[in-house]
Amino acid sequence: MAKPNIRKLHVAVIGAGVFGGWTALRLLESGARVTLIDAWGPGNSRASSGGETRVMRGTYGPDQPYTEMAARALKLWTKYERGWKRQVLHRTGVLWMVAKGDDSFERGSIEMLRGAKIRYKELSTTEMKKRWPQINLTDVRWGIYEPDCGYLDARASCRAVVDAFVVQGGRYVQAAVLPEGLEGPPLRELTLSDGGRLKADCYVFACGPWLGKMFPRTIGNLVRPTKQDVFFFGAPPGDSRFDSEHLPVWADHIDRFLYGIPGSGRRGFKVADDTRGPDFDPTSGERVISQELLREVREYLAFRFPALKDAPLVESRVCQYEQTPDGHFIVDRHPRMENVWLLGGGSGHGFKHGPAIGEMMADLILKEDEPQAIWKLSQSRTATPG
Image (tube, rainbow, N blue to C red; front, side):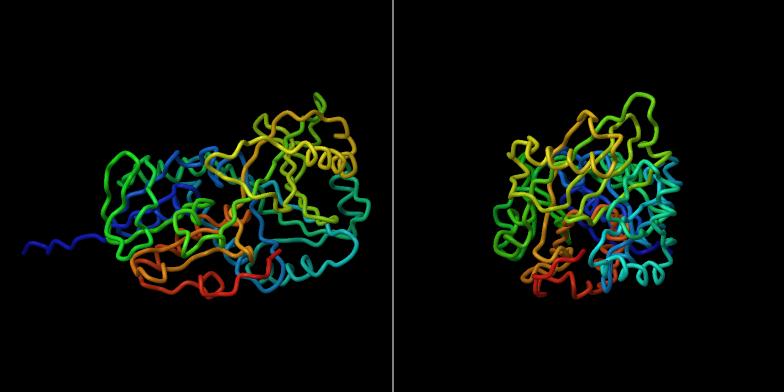
């Protein structure tokens, strides 16, 4: 007897960054027919998922869902890079330097790390000085070290996800989705910048910093793109103390939150300030770094890593956060369209969670699950997570 012809659910995913790419791949692997669309390509220079590297860490403070999600993502990154036969997760370890003053963020992280089974070790200043003498630990009281974490290749892993998606039968289209008519229910089809149209059963908009422009009435200023400058400094010739073989990814809550990634792949020593920058247009904004911020970062570098006091700036980059008022993701159906999902608000910390987000979105759509309340549009968006 011939088997009945059961039509696959067709899902259109708009945005091939880390959220959209992983969502498309996991939906495809779960049996859906998927079309993935992006205006400039996965990990492009305008995207929030662009650039060279992102931090993989589990320390997030108390009472939040992200440590558990990071633990799941860590397993999935490991699984997929083995399948791809290419490394995208570099396990350099992550060191949190706890400065004098309030350490409730770090203290609250310990229980969360333990519960998620992410390996960690509390370190004294003496232990840190012995392991990493190239760091000036003035004002640091203790530390958290996550040995299984480190950093991810950003644009390269976005490309790897889309490549895997296409190899497994997914359809990738490079074009922009025009915003006109998206908020007038019902949504039956998309209009593309090349003049084409695309009809699907379900739509997932993972548009990063453009989500508010695509849905001005529903999202609007709930997603605020901010300009974030990133700096890469060159170590002295022959000095390997600041490469990924001899230094972990680090985070420092001194006065404000600064973090960095050791030099690797002939790139410089990365330093970034997590302070939210000014509003920024991801499409037409000029990506020129702030000279004032560069001066402040140089002063910090000379203090915390004295051997890099006169290190030259070898590269710089302007990226952006897609910041929500409370720093939490947006994962919810459109309030007036059951077949439209809104996914975004990575807020500078979303990249690491990509494969776990994709897994979750596949379940939400195909199993008709409900997202956590903390990510719904109906929730108050006021507090900011660590």
